[in-house]
Amino acid sequence: MRTLVKAIHQMIADSGLDNVFMLDAPEMDECTAVIPYASTPYSDIPISDESFQIASRAKTYESVMSRSWRALHALTPDVLPAHMRSGVQYVLSLRPIQTPTYIGKDGSGRHEAVFNVDVTASWAEKGRI
Amino acid sequence: MSKATVVELSWDKNAEDELVDVVMEMLWHVGQETLRIAQNNIPLETGTLRRSGTVTIGDLPDAEKVFLDAFGMPKDGVVGKWQRDRFKNSRFGEATSVYVSYSTPYALWLHENLKWKPRDWKYSYHKRKNVAQGYVRQTKRWGFEGMYYKRVPKPAVGGPKWLSNALPIAWAKRFQFLEYVKQKRGIK
Image (cartoon, rainbow over all chains, first blue to last red):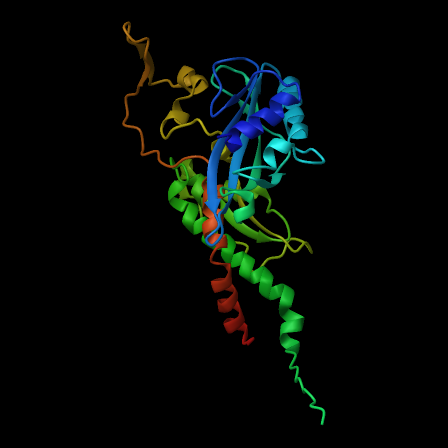
């Protein structure tokens, strides 16, 4: 079954950005990771708000901000791709909640930038909601 | 014979005038509840970050002032003050927004970096190089780099995303706060 994190990963990877990972990123100089960090289910219907952080890392400030903005543009299409609008985990909306934010350098001196997205999605078949 | 239906509308003029104020006060309480719920998940070393939490209406507060007042003057023995209720009756602009903020230089990194663990962040690579009393030792077998420090580290607790995790819980209580504000103002 396709998961939300896979679907978001695919959206970013399909935009042409290389070295995109899920859950965590290996020790690479240039990479982007899709990391789920929170889930808020609705109390009465099988829908939840899922939160993901898109964390990018690069050798220079300019390249990390460029990576992060490219990932943001990949996640703000005019129409959501078909694989997110069918089957279980039907995505109702995908909302970046801020623009890429520079958070400084990691322990190895590489620059890091992050932004977060909220995804409202179902976990039941579309026709059963 | 036709039947007429009479509908009597009673419009509370007080509510009309105070509508925005009621909602803003409700949101202010939601913000305060967010600070309360987040409290135990905020990284703790000296307490400055916890003390710097504010709820403001209309705009963000002056981050530098909030940080300095929360920090205090440790060298002179002046303990920083809690900023939580500092802006209770202040309005920073006409915007109908309520802001929950923490104002320290390291708050952003701690909130957004999902990788750090309690106690780790004090001994980052850059800090390790500059700790006068500390030294680093590596075990040959595992290549483990450990920090050995002469004094016992203070308790370091908490984790990232303390605001994001607290907000949905506080938001779920918004109707309780709305009732409270309406009762307080005498609005039915």
